[in-house]
Length: 453
Image 1 (tube, rainbow, N blue to C red):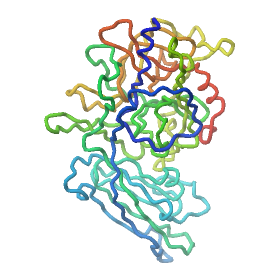
Image 2 (tube, rainbow, N blue to C red):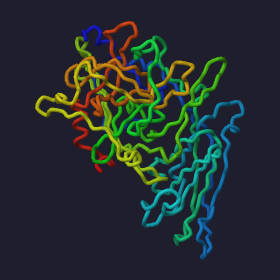
Image 3 (cartoon, one colour):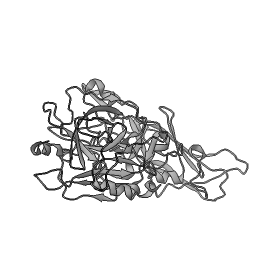
Image 4 (tube, rainbow, N blue to C red):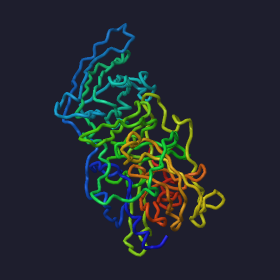
């Protein structure tokens, strides 16, 4: 690809709907960064409601012969009634006060799953579909004192006491705020004009898919995929963690179709969520990422890195980690020649090869909005390798596709990061980081926290 065209590729395509930046994830590398047009406008796809409820210093009164868990506290909330002027409460999430929420725990706090977790248990029931999340003191902390994402806004919160704990301690449960969707849906295009080009075809060819190795990272709106490392951790794009609070992020599998609402003649897509047993909280201590741009106008890809390596906690309902829940399925990364730093020959990885991308991109076609931020796959041609660390391709993708695996055969050769494809230019291409990227290989060799196995 000629150098003058390569400059077009520097447009980032992937952070969906401007989540407001809060805290950076740890172990980040950022140097000589160029401002992306995607950062010019910051919009929200979620809103925090200043609504709290709960009770402190709840006395624990359990009869000596009790075998069932007694209900120490219960409250039902309908978030749509908090602000009658606000409509479209499509999903919600509870945020607990970490200082004022106190649950009793025994010596076996890590034992059990679901309603069999030890100690006192929080039971959160979605009254719309009946799905339930179970949390004790240990797993609530793993969830960074947040609940799973629930469809709708009618929830029942119960605190169930452990009848065998002898600890004479009062308990407390305090929800400090509630997060709900933006009224305008996924607000998925934070650039004014023009949008970054990333579709190579005139008609969107992406099809719904069900690859168990690929999941949605929410609420940032990216894609991630599990690999065959020692702990079943995942890869995504570095900009999916840059300026984002990792503690808020949840990995979601089995994502259902989005709901579509027509507002003032425009079809808006609202992400819907799988049941809590298919949601996994990101472990912030495991996150390693890099997002760097070299100040080199003659070669804008030189020194550029965009990758992230991270892990999630086990699901509290099932006790399973993401890879385990996927039946142990994971992507094998393309082998890299340690001497040259290049992807090794003999893996079917060559210019002109068919390459596949599976991700959770947005959809602009009004007739297909239900597929927005739902898993989709498409194929294209591998155009070129830009050195060892970048690959260009003509696979159709959109915002939200960042972090998707770039697959040749059944081997992941890279991570989707950037746009650049143009329907009217057959020489244009999108691009991603290869698994040969030096910083990524160093991170894989030195995993952190849950990724150490």
